[in-house]
Image 1 (cartoon, helix red, strand yellow):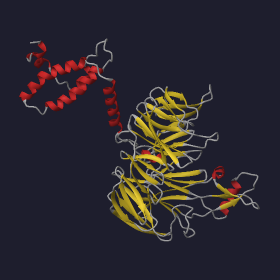
Image 2 (cartoon, rainbow, N blue to C red; image 1 turned 45 degrees about the horizontal axis):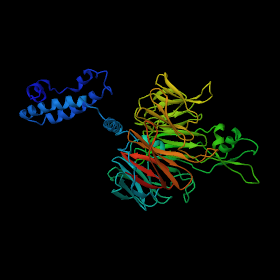
Image 3 (cartoon, rainbow, N blue to C red; image 1 turned 120 degrees about the horizontal axis):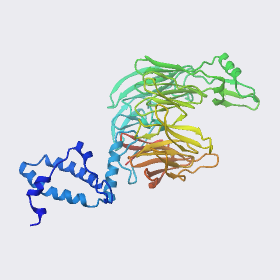
Image 4 (cartoon, rainbow, N blue to C red; image 1 turned 180 degrees about the vertical axis):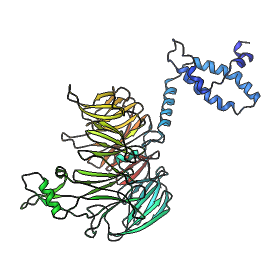
Length: 538
């Protein structure tokens, strides 16, 4: 009988190797056509064998040991097909991104619409447990983001609007634990707070209120009240359509601002209140300066000088609430912390897990309580999707002295630069995923090696744009760790869903859809598109 069938020899060689000893295994032979493949396969087989081994009797273990030794040795010498290794790599990448903002299970095949609903408030809010919030008539309802099945419904009164609302830059923020709904006639509004199970936490009458500066039918002098995060409402008092003329041949200046204030206009103050008790959590005032006036709206009649319009705008996202007036703004966190975002050409971007970046010529990273984490030279561009949130900061560092092109740099918290790369036409960073930084450009996307900055691939034909820059734009994205699905929206009645392989930029699948896409996002692992009508994709 050939030695391979003799039971005594395999019994002395069979061994289950603990995880911590795998790194000490010898390297494969130098003539191995694919170094390391045997070691990877043996590791996979060992994991499966260990689970099975624990369920066997002692006699069963003897029998399995006799056969397994031969199988393992034979498998170690056999060639491992690239398809097996690739499938395992995709599985590991998918497991690595689960739970991260913007992650879904699998994008290898085209996603189809699984459900749709009309959202009466024209906005999208999400609750913990994978729920999408919608309004219909006088009711607010929660639907499962995976199936579209309604899980609960509650009548809150006429003209309901709920928040905090999710937008393109809120993809990095987890769904809310509670939702705040504002409802009722403009002269008698009610605030209702609901938990993720649909239970009423409480409600309060707040009298006259409007949801923005353009609300019709609201009594003069009524404040703007907007549902915010963590059971709060954002309130801005004394909203008036303040105007002031200035000479037609000049820019608005300090005299214009003095005229505004002399006529009774006051710098607007954002007040974050507990929705149920009215307790003030924090407040901040926009200090308008002459240089901010150029960002104000304006009107002009044929027979009069131009007039300046100052309409405060409130944006309450899951991570922060912002009050913007002309070219100035203030930001308050859900806990009431006023964040020092600066005033000169800056904007705030939320970060995964809380905090935000105050972006400017020198960017500041702040945590949830407003503490400065880092200050980075240049315009910091956090990826919309990021599997390495603790990795180097990605910064638009300005123009290169040699070729006069924009540069994207990877910088650590101490300011040390790991790499920089040409990024002409850069408009943002869509993703840092699977070892690739996906950069948005004026015409498409470029993939850079996350470790070196070297260009891996480029797709310059994804957006249709005219010479003046108008046309298509990216409208949100989701990932499965290997592929990137993003929306391409434009000015027409159609949009596209496009999936690229992150490793080489090739198109995996693409489909054109009807409707104007506002954004594409993931809610606890489920892809959701919003264009006034909410679509579940699966």
